Image 1 (cartoon, rainbow, N blue to C red):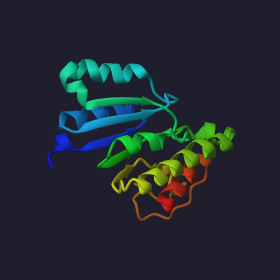
Image 2: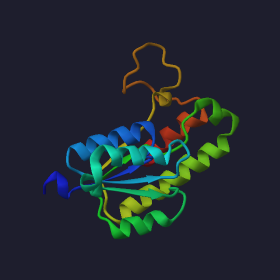
Image 3: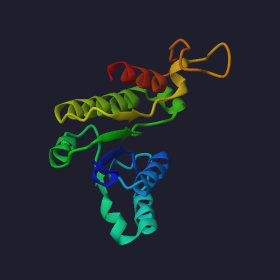
Image 4: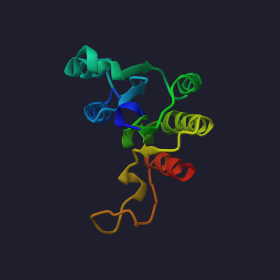
Length: 167
């Protein structure tokens, strides 16, 4: 199977990291579907990617405006076989997570658990999960490395840690 036959789903693909990732995937010849609710992103980013690639190459790019907490995700998976997924979606501010933890738990946990369930149902087993160094809390030494103790201190980091464990 060539790259051009492989389809990658990028959640929050209209965000900063997502849109740059989408550009690289398209450059490498993948077909890309973006699934984004535009909480931390803008539709203009998708338009810019389309402008960059032109009408013909943009045929390899789809944009779905929706939220992972909605069950519409299953409809997308039933129509497209994804070879892999890159998961950037979710709220992202530590301070805001402290002020409104329930919003973070709802957004990040419910949305990603829905995603995991649909991926399992449709046999999509390859995923890059965008985690965070906040899962390590306040490490005693720097630089922080992956074998440090996991002890997230804030709701944002705890949601990332929970989702890593669930995955």
